[in-house]
Image (cartoon, rainbow, N blue to C red):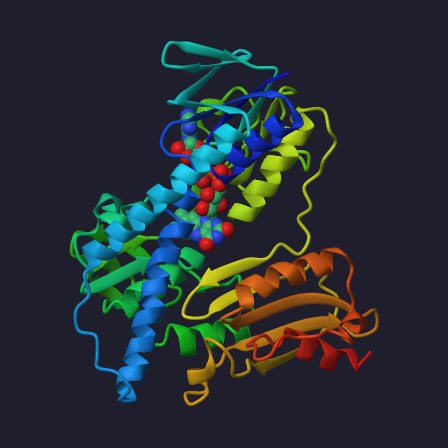
Length: 430
Ligand SMILES: Cc1cc2nc3c(=O)[nH]c(=O)nc-3n(C[C@H](O)[C@H](O)[C@H](O)COP(=O)(O)OP(=O)(O)OC[C@H]3O[C@@H](n4cnc5c(N)ncnc54)[C@H](O)[C@@H]3O)c2cc1C
């Protein structure tokens, strides 16, 4: 079978490798860089900057305590160049891995014709096509929006903005607020509705009070115009460089008229990643779903297996999410909205949070359970280890672990994770 994949981001690259490993002939077409947004403009850029931001926060604390001297110089260009070099190195590993898996890589912009994909003058006929062209920043219809920057411009900033105004209330807005405030910018966040509405109220409270304490957050504010030197809002003018973090829009233009699209331009799929056209599958951000790399990868695998004639379905239960701040913020929620018993506790002292004890900032964990059935519904955790433990906890929930299964849980010590303690405590109310 001849499989063509368009887009070499997490969804497309994973799909291509999976289909090649199943033994099919696979061509992967990418117009820019393998790794997509995640590696080249998104997750890894945030990781690179956030490591520096954490270091700066730690240095500030240690200099306030007289342990070290204050850091006064920060070379933004060196940070950006270092991130670019690291990304280029990872990209080479991706390329190697993809080719070794047996995928034929084609560099170019794909266009779609009947049962064939066109790149410049070359045709790539397919038995099955996997569409994985991802998404880009959504630019809201606000006057002057071309005066604003988005995530993709950040590595090319020539300096750290003195004042930064971030428009948007989601994860990306929070991450850049944390990063730039740690690097010395005066940061204001403008939200049309609520900031971080994906989080439980208590968890959001901790984030705002302890992790973004130097950021000014404005909720329920309408932006009227974006100018080169700031924003006009319902609450008046807010000066600063403007960064839009107002969501994503699917790169679905080449699929118009070929498969059914939803109201936001997303390619409509079922849980087998089948589109309305029998030979076309779609995966990742293009389908307008959850919008994270692990989900894009899962969907890529599911699309590839179905395209190769192997039944597979995506499982969207207990999907772990995370926010990169001074501590990881990680969480998942179930769809069950029956009455639940909730509890929360501060994190414990341990690696990465030891020095937070004196400031009362060791993190925070909240869990909701159904005391009768022992089902664990929601977990949110803020700690240096939350991102890693949440992925394993999510797997346990998908495998139907209950509160009583944590009875014999053996932690490592010292550790900043307290989720097991809280679950054990809540289990007593069953
Ligand atoms: C700032 C930021 C931070 C993020 N942080 C995280 C995080 O910490 N964790 C997380 O899980 N997710 C994060 N995400 C989301 C994550 O990056 C995406 O969910 C993920 O990249 C989606 O993968 P994808 O393969 O669907 O699409 P993409 O990564 O968008 O890849 C699509 C690819 O298709 C290519 N393409 C498009 N059109 C064509 C065409 N016509 N021909 C050929 N090639 C084409 C593009 O060049 C691109 O390489 C972040 C996103 C942003 C913007």
